Length: 238
Length: 295
Ligand SMILES: Nc1ncnc2c1ncn2[C@@H]1O[C@H](COP(=O)(O)OP(=O)(O)OP(=O)(O)O)[C@@H](O)[C@H]1O
Ligand SMILES: [Mg+2]
Image 1: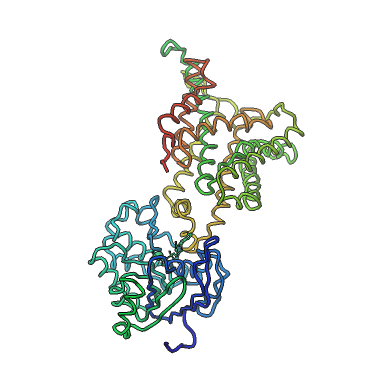
Image 2: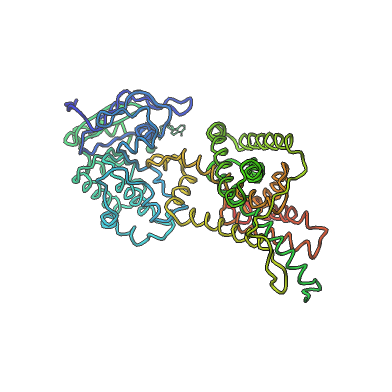
């Protein structure tokens, strides 16, 4: 097991979550240090998305503890959690069809200082700049993903929750997203990343958590990846 | 005096004007319904009663405080809008996740109560409301006489309707509203207070109904059932335009007012039913309405 540092940026303890009658998270424990990229792996239906949504306050039925810089978030609504400094990029990307690309990009309000400027985002994702007037959902899958990531970089949130940003995308675009994550890390952003593609994850992650049936079953550092490979295959069934 | 298709121009343009006036009210009311439906997912059957409340607010402001048409035009929509906010906070907000039917029943019940209370105090006969003196009189355009007040109603309705359309389609605030209509959960997770936006949207839609009520007061009488008289037609307008389309609500409102007016000239027997006939035809051909998106 890993050493614990005094105060993680994000600390999840005994997090439980329900959708109506179905109990999905059964006591998640997870920590993210400031500046880290932590990847959450697990099979389909393990509860990865539910974990991110519970942190973000989108799943209303949840108990346990989620702390950001020591501040308890478990009782807050999602707008308050966003204001505390967390931004969420959903698995389905959440690009709005009734908004053009520019409106999509500027939809999340700036909640704190320290976000990226629009021109910096256009440098990262030049495609977006060329399509500002298009309907958001007319973009290609890769462009929509860049827009979905780009728009939360403006908000000033320092903790980003990214849910499978590479899902269904071409290798060149996956590479571009990988570079973006590395750049964000070098700028001091903290990222909790959900991935199925652990080859991609291994290019950006500092540490991993593996979850199964709504619980963490394994945690290790990137340097331990090779040693854990066999176990990983077993857990992920790949 | 000249004739068009054998109809004297005075009669034709006169009915066209009446059509535009009615269309102005249809547009304002169906716009409010569309805005409310988009954000709240509720078919606001109280809308007609809130239109009536606007007219009565103007009437009572005059009777009780001596405030005339112009102050009432601002104060009545604010007061009635605030009453809408109270209804949303205390009742409607609990229904969003349920079937449309619950919102419909609740708002219909509130409409019946409001109408009943006013009928109890004011009877069914209407109370007259004076034209503002600054808008009395009219212009002789040569081919017809145009009363100033009616011109004012049409122009104001156009300005308010297209102003609302502009805010929703072209501004940052409107982008927030459209996004929250599409995916309120995600918009809230971006740090936007969606529940407050929903409350204010309802207040605004209700305020629009009240504004229409104030503008209607000098033309029709102020009476408890004025809302239920017009709202049936407005719901037909909404069905024809397609629920939830802003521009559709405006264009259909004006368009059907004009069609109704022209029917009075060319085929008077059908003038009361033409909108419902169109509704039936549209429902057969395009069930989602002329401007509606099929789900
Ligand atoms: N809105 C919902 N209502 C009810 N059950 C849900 C809902 N969303 C997810 N679930 C269930 O919760 C469990 C965990 O789902 P979750 O989306 O968190 O998994 P995941 O690890 O993100 O999977 P994937 O890799 O497929 O994205 C699954 O069994 C899923 O069917
Ligand atoms: Mg998922």
